[in-house]
Length: 294
Length: 327
Picture 1: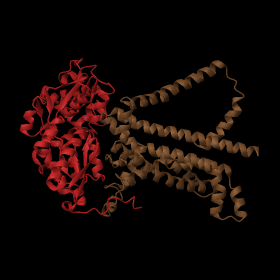
Picture 2: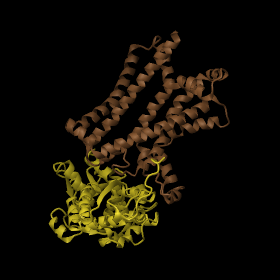
Picture 3: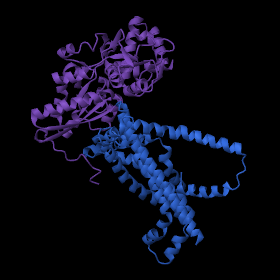
Picture 4: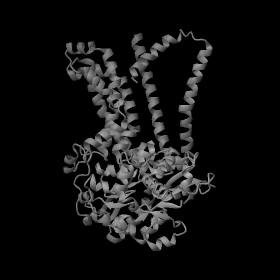
């Protein structure tokens, strides 16, 4: 889950690799199992999506992607991500800062609370907002009286997405900041730096890779979220449909090829995420090696 | 923040506006119908008033859609699978008046449909009537009556058949229904989901479906793959429509919304309805399409004492569906 743990694991693997003692047969079987698993659960579905998307030719593929309703869905998906990610960066930074650098009553409770969106089913996450902001909800009558729309409109979709993706940045940063401790910040403050200076010059450079990693995961999930968004969207074509919802609609309309074409967009997004993730890990390990050598 | 607060300050007088936007919240199988109808109505309205009307669509299981409107989905128009779901807009949401059903002709149901069987081409299991669905080894696909409007029509049609067959003897009707639902392989949440399960994933020997949904599946996926079987007895399904009074009052779209629904009863509206395999109300149009819609013995919802009673008897908790499904 956490990039920092991933990085640490990689270092540990390098140590372990030299001391492999299993017989070749065991290694062979384990590799085969992993490969079969990969083929059945990853490569096969991806092939099906690509083949399905191109079943009616390249021209149809691009036609499906540039349809007004598909474009509207893509726009909405991007807009939701653009609003969601900065909000969660702020939240993640604040939460990780508080948890890693300070001691206070209820710290354990807050740590658990941050994980809540991971353990709650996305459908429930969406439903919470309908129950609070819906017309029959707690705040419903007040919102209606003031003509403010939350659910079945952009704000609801953003809220649900923020909730579902809120742990990503915080979960990345907490272990990282905890491991780094307070020494550097204390030193900076003793040398006369202000709070902001300490943050920009000391804390942020130390956590930038972890933060970027969290941002990428958060973005990917924000664009791909289905369950929670499905509950609060209202499914109005061209207005409140995100890309994942659009795929479902196309599939239900017997437009299988178009559904696969739009799916392939989401799939490419996943690949970009993976590539970025690798790039960041590579950059990070290069930087740590450099510091280690110097 | 301005981005987050939308929908504020809409002008109130429809007649003064150049553009009108309507939201039609409907159930699953009507997507294609309303896509065509919206174009026809937009043209008609432009000719009549000079206004440009844009109609947005939202589709899903009928019960779920009613729930969404009650929870604040701003539907100007609700076109749902059954009167019971429209009733909920009054009883649970206070969004329409109690007398909604008498505001438009024909119980506010501009089109009807019925429940048929969709089987694989050549009918390999020789399925002819409801009797054949309870035979061991027959895989049946139907959605869940708890969540799907279409599924409730399916269930009641089967019940009506059993009732006739066993002369109303409840001791025999319930085991019949139990046997039928033991044969159900997948209980999808909505009608379209069930159709996809049958035609695309190839599960089951027979799909109990809306007549229009069965025709559409054949049209989309090929006449060489499936055929329709008409049972000896079925049910007259009346999908109901209404203007959502409270919403159109807020949007100032009442006039257009009313015209939108009324135009469904026009010659052109009925023609589009028939083209999408819904049974038209207009006698003239029905005559023209008589070859597609065979006459069949149909019971109505009144046979079950209306939707409120049918819902309480069969689909509420501990109703007949719970009894036969757990038996």
